[in-house]
Image (cartoon, rainbow, N blue to C red; front, top):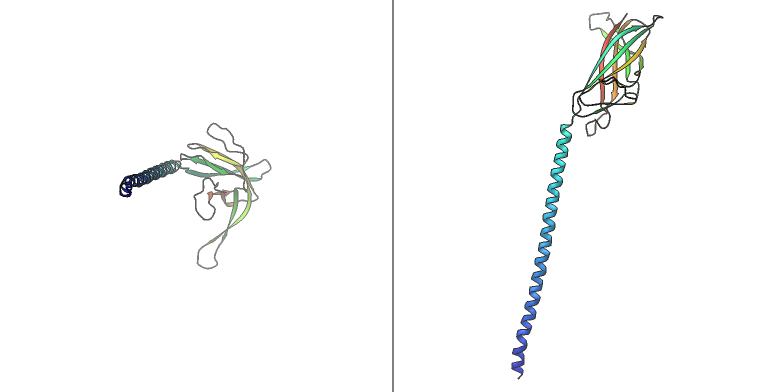
Length: 208
């Protein structure tokens, strides 16, 4: 009787063990499927993020501001005989990105008188620039439609040309070097540690 009872209970025990193993296998399979889904989602998310970053980088590379500056000078004289240098800065944006130019962060126009030191003996003539005066512009730049932008920041739109007028008073005749100089706006500066970049244009004029 005891032997028969043992034989009857043995299949029940085996069934319970088998059910437990089956439950563990099902749990592991479910966990594996979940982990695979998370891995697949993460991989796809990273791939999508990388694709979007590459597209954004390509878009930024395609948007380039190419600013070409030209400085034209002429002499002006008022009724009292005072001499002035008329400075015309022509800023042309040949790129595909709008550029921001700071026009009154400091006085962007400077006139230097050139002093010539003739050597007593044979040698090169030394030229020493001496700052005579500095100043700014009459107002904001004029675009192609002759619309004026208010200072201080000037947005040079892509494909457009702006003109800025200024006067520098000089006391005497001579040869002058005129410099237009203003810092590059942080949005247009190249990344990385370096000295601050500047927009610069120069020209010479002989004042009589």
